[in-house]
Length: 243
Image (cartoon, rainbow, N blue to C red; front, side, top):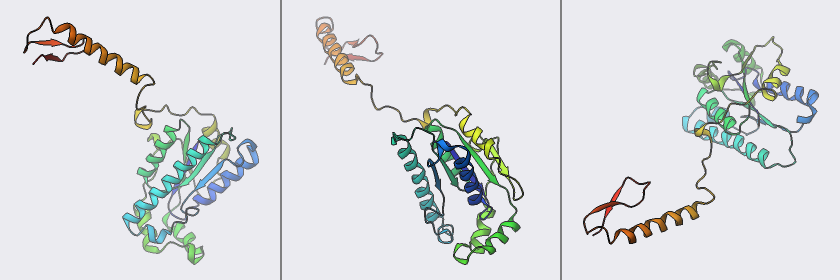
């Protein structure tokens, strides 16, 4: 599940660039047609003017969006007929949330990249005014989102590889595809891996150790008086005593 994270100011062209990448993949990589999952505020029916005016509402919406990414990952891993990579184009602005999504990608042992739509505040305000009224951000919401936007930094592993595009730039679609399909994914670490609850022979090992302890106690009864200490097992440093 290679992951593409779209980031930038509101109304900076993230949805447009995402669609351009999808169209390029459909036209030039037929093996991946039908395996692209686009997750964003738009298709998750998020009322942005309502959600982004209150931190608790935004936190809840962020949870729903992250869950959508997780569900897509599970569906991909269980879909036996899907023999090719599937990947998600995601639209979000916060650095902390980009890191959370990076951890999801890393736990899946797959690649990721970030596309940064670097437009000015004046430009996104103009594009916002050109939208239909029902799709516009309120000016106070737009100002707040622009103010707290955290630009990606290629020195951060969750923001690399980073592709920066502006209005007049062509999206480097093939370079992005190479970064997704022909790059070795980062190795998973302990924080992103589900640890097994027990080994396959846990019951056998527990029974074996218990019998060794019982046998040792019977053998030591004739050697030690009540109150004297002895080691129950050779592998143990703890001492016990008869009472």
